[in-house]
Image (cartoon, rainbow, N blue to C red):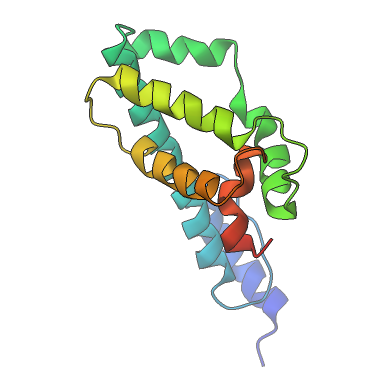
Length: 151
C-alpha cells in the first residue's frame, strides 16, 4: 500500500520544477487543482481590472505607463486579506466604502471612459445596481457577494 507521504515525497521534486512555490493543500482529491484554478481566476480578474484601468486612463489622457505609476504609491495587495475576510464574514454594517459611493465612482468611471471598451466594470456596476435596488446601498461595498455567501 502506498502511503500519502511517500507519494508527496516522490512528487515534490518533480512538481517543484513546475511552480514557483509548491503548497500541500491536503489529501482531498482535486483540491490542488481547485486551488490552482481559483488562483488563476484571481489573476484573470486582476488582468481584467488592469485592462479597464488602461482603457479608462486612455480615455482620460493618461498613458498606460503613467497609470502604472499609481502602484508606486498605492499597494492594493496589502489590503487583500482584510477585504476578503470582511467579505466572507459578512461584515457589511461598518462600511469602509459603502456600496452607493462605490457605485457613484463606477458611474463616474463609465462616464469618463466615453464608450471605451471596459471588460469588467459594466458587469460590476450592474451587480451593484441590483444590490442597491435591494436596499444594500449603505452597506460595505463587499456586500455584492452576500448572496453567494448566504449572509
